[in-house]
Image (cartoon, rainbow, N blue to C red):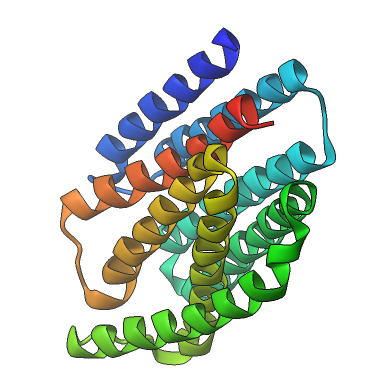
Length: 232
């Protein structure tokens, strides 16, 4: 347990170090720090599973964390090489979306052990709420003069996936209180991406947004690791 906690702390410290450099300029060294920060939460997850056993649920969550690492790299390359802006955005967003598919599958297996009857209503209700939440996000974005351009439908699709995961994990947490750790991580993940959207599409280039976005994101991923440590 101590090893996992150490790597969680290391991940957050590396994240802050990355933010300090990234706020000045996106460089190869800042990207290296970002990768190391992600590797730290992946190692924390591996150590957590060594304690609790390499269950299918744990492995799926770990794969989701690895997808986050890939997405991290691709989205930072988007900043470093703006001439390939859309290509890196699509591939980075796809990596995170695939990660959420693994998180969903892990959550599904988890609830099948707890209370499978809730799936009859939880999934359709979460989908409806995700659609409404995405509509609200797009309307607010329009009021804020955010321009999505050619990637609008990619943004909409990813928003539905992310908001669905938030609502679905909250429903699961109602039946299993320890799962609030995971659901809380998903909420923070959602908040991180909302800040990122303001940076990418709302012209918010202030340094504070870089700190908020990344600290929230790494906190979210480390909460998933904490669930591996305490919830399985």
